Length: 532
Image 1 (spheres, rainbow, N blue to C red):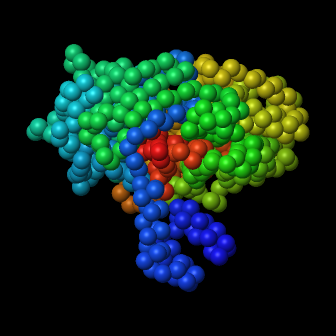
Image 2 (cartoon, rainbow, N blue to C red; image 1 turned 90 degrees about the vertical axis):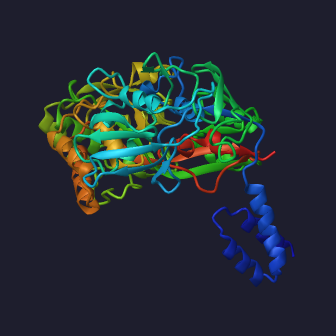
Image 3 (tube, helix red, strand yellow; image 1 turned 90 degrees about the horizontal axis):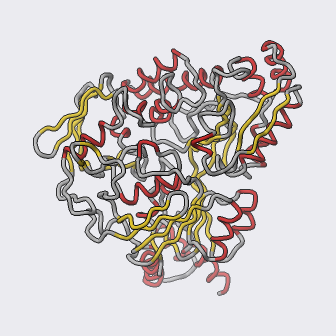
């Protein structure tokens, strides 16, 4: 009897078990159909989202210079805040496909060059102003043109015209065909904001999202309050209020969860996650991802302007050791290509094996034997980044190099170190389609081309793949892109990781989580709930 009870509890706690499977197993255990159905119904009721409660979050990836201007977002905390108070035209669905948001439907011309987005009616901003086509057009246009300061300039570069058609339709035209165009509007830099004096008000506190923004102290604390009149009411935005605390130190963030000071944390310290898993009332949320751990070298700065020198570093970087000692198994080895294993175009045959003889060969060709260089790092780049840099340095020293690891301050890392210092630690959150990550970081004119790499063939292939409607041909193009960036690019990508978070047992988490970014695609505030 005790064994049966334990087994029932195990099955009821298995979020992947279907109702049919549960009824089949319990029937074999001798439980009646009515009793088993009642147990399943109780579980379903307990797992259903409920309205109410206060959610406290401790998040890494925040800065005191953060602002509400989404064109400048580069870290998780602001993405989470934005997706709680604002909306986009399109969401990434749980199945990874584009899903309706402020656009309730869309259609493309046969050549995929003209797209019509029909807007949802009756949507209001949090101050009661009705959403208009003008708001949408102006919100798109801030990311376009030579003068734009948006980090998503590369993503939106192909748009040649945006105009209104009728009362509820926005027409988007592109110079080159783009079969994935709806995904452009899932980029976290894009959100619809109200128009003020004919322009998009990027700093507006008013959004169409599930929550009011009540307090905003950048890099410190943000509070939100549920908007009962949100167009998504009843389907999203369950908790009454939210408090988001910036906790950059890994140990402090875990301690805040264990002590009950917060209910949710992102990026728990992986080196102590085994102990955290044993804490009563704590659940680890683990989602396989295209999260890339990158180490960009600016290829216009010596010695990183020499590809043989870069290859020497790549061949002497211990990839599996990185997975084992830094990620503690929460990831898979990478080979300096930016497209991870969740993409259909991922090339499993591309390998950059650890080989000190090859590393020495390329180092000799570079003429830079014994070179000294700095590598900037901080654990705000990703958990364990400092230890990873030290691990890499040990191996680079084996081929005669003299690396100097510079531990940078956490606050301001993304504004003062990344994309400025010659060599540093970084990460790239997952994107739903290949074009989004390639257009924003790996084209020669991308605003976030943090390696300053210029590979004309990559530029050509990315544009061609964007408009190619034959999926098999697109995959072939993207696989060539991976080879080129791995062999000639300026970043070391030793692994792709999982999106890992931790919650206490007061928090309800859906059985399926969205991709496109960590923390349920950045939407956890409006998708998760308090159990009561």
